Image (cartoon, rainbow, N blue to C red; front, side, top):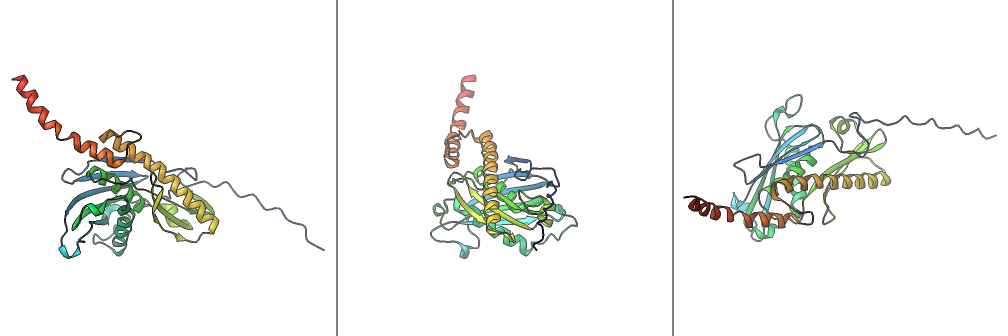
Length: 271
């Protein structure tokens, strides 16, 4: 005699720690030109993450033996400040810092025309002032905007976001608690205009269906961040809706020489 089937108890409604929906990003603000002596810079707040990125170059590679004869090198230094986490960490660069710097370089390089800068280097320095989970994605977002601020032509902006699994649910943009207590984390970097993924990692265990859902959710998050990046750049460079990042940079470069020519003429007329 077969046993009667028992009804499954309905799962409790899933609620995220910070009250966000499963597909909702943390609040994001981006500023440009925050480091006066850098060629380009950007500051991002993504949730409670606070990150600054500075770009120097293209410039001559030192040591020269690391240069490439036919293309430039993108070199990224990622560093977490001792006070960025609790308890405080050592100020010395860690192996994790070095690895994330390499990951960031691989994620950003496809957007650059490195073949235009043989034997040269573009240095990107990223400092994590306050960490709140997902720092590598937030750092990529800041670095991409800083590269544009440096006047470096790009094929497209790179936006990065992670999706993950928390209590059996696929969620977007994991915070610090979710990053530590969650079951999986899938960081993705994406160029929305070119529809190209430049970074895809996974930490944890997901089924094939969950992996596909997480990647799709992360890409949608990247597209939202991309719009925030563009809005930030529009305020400074006056980018039009259909204009590419490289075109905006060229327009800005073309307009700059006109200013010093006009100013003396205006002064002469006033005299």
